[in-house]
Length: 246
Image (cartoon, rainbow, N blue to C red; front, side, top):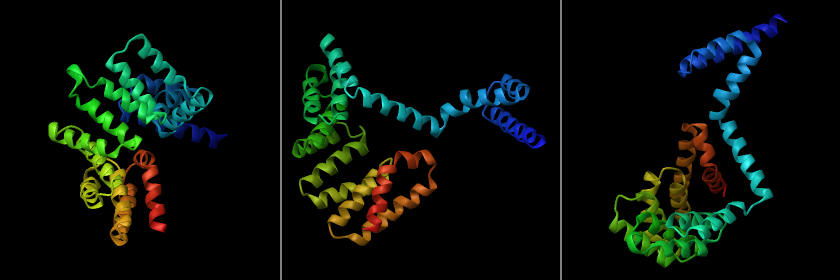
């Protein structure tokens, strides 16, 4: 029993220190110290757990389970919204849901329908159309839109526009042009996708040694980053490991 009491006291002190350090209200100290077990549990589930990686994983798991029972619920809701009001916002919302469902041609058609009147030159809509066209395999038009965005709005989502342009160039076989764009993205893109695509295209261009250096850099960089970054970049890091072993 004395051991259990010491463990409970240690947990209380840890939570009390956390409450003070993170600027929580002082009344949490009275709850934590006045109710050894219940107070600590309340503090954990109200203040600590919602901001933790475990909470985010649990939320993703719940969303996955819900979607598995009714995978088309969000799509139906967006369609109903558009039938009620054919606004640009509702068309964009439906376009995004179509993209998430792999209906890229439909998403492109919806984005295209928005580009008229006061919205004819809207960079967000033009970018959405470029991404949808890229995913639908319309690489020439996607690249043309990306180049147009770069000229008309040079400060708009610079890295994302560059990525669309680079991917369209790669798909069209313009490997040297794509490599030039990916090389910039390897240093500027906020995540590991730009670096991985640069390394993968180096492999495709027969420059395997350079590619290995890029993949090694990705993995070293990830080790220095917090856990949530590695979680967010899991797909690209896994591809880098596979490429290192190939």
